[in-house]
Length: 252
Image (tube, rainbow, N blue to C red):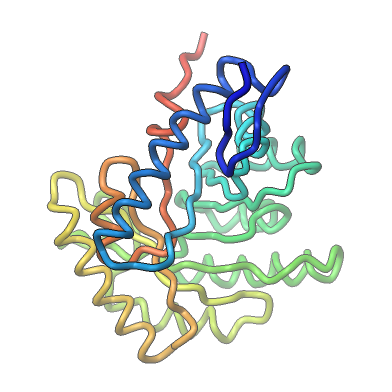
């Protein structure tokens, strides 16, 4: 049976295997949620969907690309680097969304279109050096940089991120670095908190950032369980994993 994939492509034959059909159906559901949330918020443009593929095999990234997905997210460099190097024929953008050690900057610079978890000056310095080296060698594009800001009262204690008071300094450092583009903010709603209240706070931080850096207007927020709240409060990028790919594959 032929089915419509994400973006309207018709799938059949090898591309129409059970896993591809499963992914296509889940993508349709998530896209429907995003469309409905954008309409409810009175937004004419929908946020960009980043499908979080961490823990899932490279074969799933290939299936997603065949279904029209152009953005995938990873949170461990070793896994992301291996997938990216094995899938160079695909036109997908790799987004690094996990906490990043400075000594991994050189590796991340080889494949990442964005790093969405910048939370300290040392990481900015490491990424700037790594991107310059990579641009000199390969001519790669500038790196889109999102500052991860903590929405916790005790900044960074649970879900990572810089304290709100540190955002301005980090933003200035990124904006001044050759090869780095200040894109905006990323955040994760605190565990157990009202996501609407959390993302309303994030929208306020974003407005303050834009007052100094008008082009830094992107907000990466919202996951499977709270995407509607994120869309309501202006998210431009959504990071959706389990509602599309399912639970983490068993190891054994």
